Length: 594
View 1 (spheres, rainbow, N blue to C red):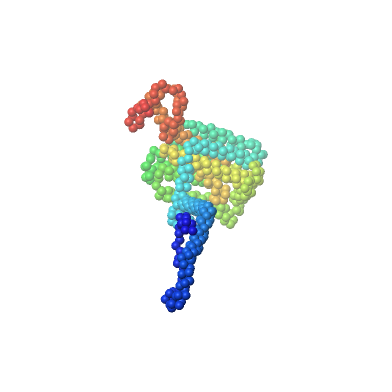
View 2 (view 1 turned 60 degrees about the vertical axis):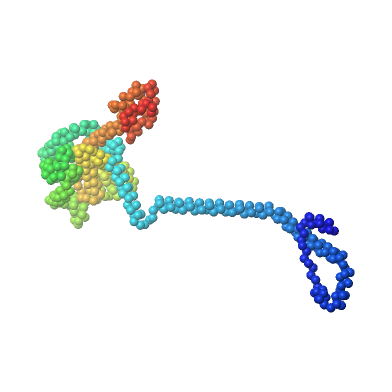
């Protein structure tokens, strides 16, 4: 037993046993009477050492069992922990993965929120607030930039496109005019000696003469135009004076026609072109002196302009006198005359026009019709008949018109259908679309002239071009305002469109003069465009490609940047046998290793 205990002691740690509790009677017996002590004593003695050893053994056995049970319990718990540890580790790993996924989701959400915030910030930068002084200032800057861009396009443009714009619009307007003259005059001239095509063939002949004159003026040297200014004006004054002789005759109360054998025409139309060229030549020589009153007045206004106006008004042609007034004012303004002189001249011109209207019965009737005064349409020759049927023609055209050649008002309802009121026939047959197309062609022509004037370096070119432009646009505006009822009826034809050989020829000659200036601007621009090419090739410069080793090589084909004048391509000709040498622009030394 002891060996077993010792073996157990060696195998397991010994747990000290707690002393057994004794009964209270034993303590009392020990300190009590002798009878009790004596009675108990034999019992104790009888048990002896053997009883004590058995009791100790029992106590030790129970203690070992408790310890064994505790150890077994601990081993079972350890085994359970060992068996449950992978599960716990897996749960912990799953929890860690879930946490990582949650963290990734949170990061993605944060990134999306950041991107959204960044987009909001960019959008807020791109789209400013819709209120506040900063937003209003930005809108003002944008509007100013749009206006500047549009003005640059209108003013500068391109010299090549400007030339073709002028030529194309002039030819298109001439073609439209010939078609409308044929359509509007065929009915009235059907029974005449010339037949239905009489006026059309006559107008086409004058158009051919005008086109020849236009190309001749376009190809002539500019110096000739300047030298012909004074002779042209003197010839125009002579022809205007011949109108007052028996060679001249009147139409509808205006004596402004001249007959020289089989040729008839209006000298005032040629006088407009002569006045524009002559004014440009004179004012260009004056320069800044035109800012002084005496130099602005002499000789353009007095005696030149005054003599022309006097001869025109002698034939009672107030409409043509108004066009001359617009032309003279435009050339003086372009030359740099002070504005206060225009105010004074304008007041004097309006007063003169009112006075000339009051002294003429025909003009007063037209003004009364225009104002709609009562009794203005009474009389043998109804002055309301022509403007009223002109409005009927425009109103019946609608959006698309009744068709080319299908006008109803040209059947002797509308007087002068092929002349002053031809635009109403055009609006009736071609509608609003055709009328706007013609207006767009006029706008294109005026825009081309404006570009030529704005790019001109010569005062003669600028002043002459503005004078011709003012003549054409002024006459067009007056005619359109007359046929639409915005102004009283004034006998002014529509340029390019109305019947009249002398008017069409003079207008085409004027366009030829402007084309001459545009062609010269194109020719002057070519050396400027070719200069970078010459610099890049080194023509005529020491140290360049012409004087260097490449001069002995074959003819190369390179790409040249016109803005910087630098070579961007390699030569594709015969390769040079000498090493390539470049020149340093700062030191002007050759570097053979470059």
